Image 1 (spheres, rainbow, N blue to C red):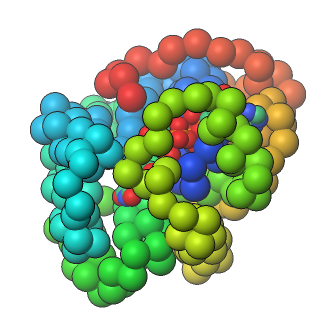
Image 2 (image 1 turned 135 degrees about the horizontal axis):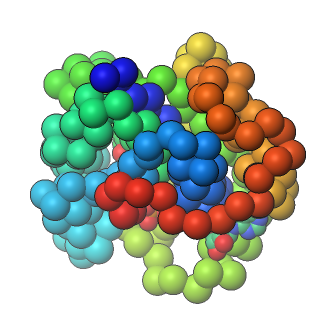
Length: 227
Ligand code: T5A
């Protein structure tokens, strides 16, 4: 059986990753591509337990501790969910992956790139395509305020941190153009979705994935592990 494809969505808070990950998975599924939709931190039982500690926990964590926990969660996620899905020929759409550790713990909190690279080697999985969703801070703040959820560990950090994270994601995309596509995510949901589907079609042709403009407003759940 053919090996599946691994697509990640990345970006700062409120960039619209979860919304677009769901829409992309639905579009692929509608095209007859078997899809698993998942997220980080999380996506496997042990990884979800680590997520609760990372996002909900009130204990202060050193940047290196956070980095280790994100990679511990990722190791579970890849070993138990992503790896088996790809081996079974499914495509995996993942809301955040290793680039989030590079941007948040690396660019944001100052963890050395070499440390992150060493842990990445333990996980040993590189996405086939990474969509980096970029929005100005005011747009992101407006979207998050509209949602009204309680702020988690990262959402509570200051504007300077989030500016470093945004710059980090842009640098990651610029350094790996064969893997990454920077998506202007400031526009309406449908416009962002169209840009994402165009990037997927160009980079990872999937038989049956509708041409631009067709079926791009379709919504619905994709199969696989819920995010
Ligand atoms: N983290 C994660 C690390 O520090 N290191 C790591 O290695 C990893 C993997 C995860 C946190 O963990 C950190 C980063 C994060 O802080 P999370 O709860 O999963 O926490 O948070 P996020 O991934 O940031 O998810 P959010 O839900 O906050 O943002 P999204 O997914 O970018 O945005 P989304 O799609 O939920 O949309 C937010 C709101 O905006 C609306 C939506 O309807 C929603 O209300 N919206 C739009 N509105 C207008 N126009 C558009 N185009 C819109 N798109 C969405």
